[in-house]
Length: 571
Image (tube, rainbow, N blue to C red; front, side):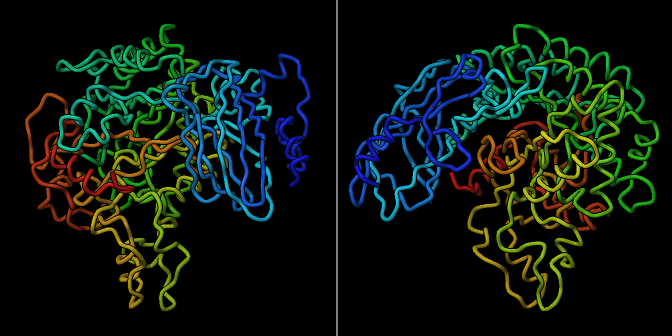
């Protein structure tokens, strides 16, 4: 590129033309500008044989921000060598420029500029696509008014509530984490707030109630966008296949669930005081999947799950919650979808999607009340197994025939969540739904993390030697020994995924190792007993649980320390 052409490019704003080349910005009317959430002006100011200097100006047409990050990718071998007015990092061809402490504020209509030097050889092709906090710039997002989330629906909701937003850090969990040795490394991470009994709405045993959390979120929000993550979790006959998380309501108490649990939550969330928050609700974990896998003639069936299937109160309760909460414009409902080691088998996969559609169209709910689904909530399934795939064979034997995979179609959560999203859309859910994956405890790092595939002496040695997920059986779910923190919470990490989240706060127990009397409606499940030899739901294997665990939801210091030690990515 000659210096003459370089100077010419300095006067152009890159817009996403069909050819991918730079075209001059055409002045637009105010409405047209508002529909473009952000613009990026990338100028090559100077260039020589082995390097160049660039200046970048970002204009934000969406909601004001207190921090920002711009991303783009190069088509060639350009490498940023130094920069100013932004923290610039590069991985391969992907570049991220994030604000410095002094220029994080970016008002609606405001601009910020930064620059850098870079090396290259061959052709210095201009980048053709930029994002600001995950939202594509220089392109009309179809929202008619920016919005900052990559599109919106008639209610005013953005497509992905996590895009361009901070996420609420629960001060109660943060304080417990910070009090642990080494805990300050993660105590500023966002986690879910669990509304797991009626008393939790107003605050039980001196803890913060829902309004207190929302008020704290407003204080954290500042001038930017803020997501608050709630777990709505108190169905009648709750968790019919797991005693540790049984709830306070009996199988027939659907009216009490509606009037004393969902209605008060909805009334608080609908308060105009909280209209500026993006409220993500995780609806009733572990409920609907149990109706698919733990009923009827299956070996895994329980009488309690048969009861809930027969009386319909899981479906009615979920439908009611979706309808009431979905009527609030700034609430985003994500319905729990189990995990790959639960509904990833052929006989569970499609029936689960069909059942979710039934629930989402009952009690006045429609599919428009569902922003998406969450997988792996409070579970341990690895995000991505890199050492083997479902299509591998060993000496002519498919990986699906290994004891670990056991004919499942999926070996990890990411592949499952993406495939299940497609299945959900095929049964009638909106094509814009996104998936959340709980990565709070699925890192499986530490010294025992495999560095490559297992030996090919048999399909079992191959899978067991290479798998990151080191549970004894994929059906084990309680306080698993050897687990570690997974990917840190982040927005838009992969296709079809709205966010990786820590919906289960690390360090909160799944259940007690032995029976403990309590007034929280929580029973004792032998799957939390490290001496337990199992049941049909985990193929009669040992439970793999840690010893000396407290009641579910109570702080478990030994687990928290283990999770930090085995974190992957490492802390």
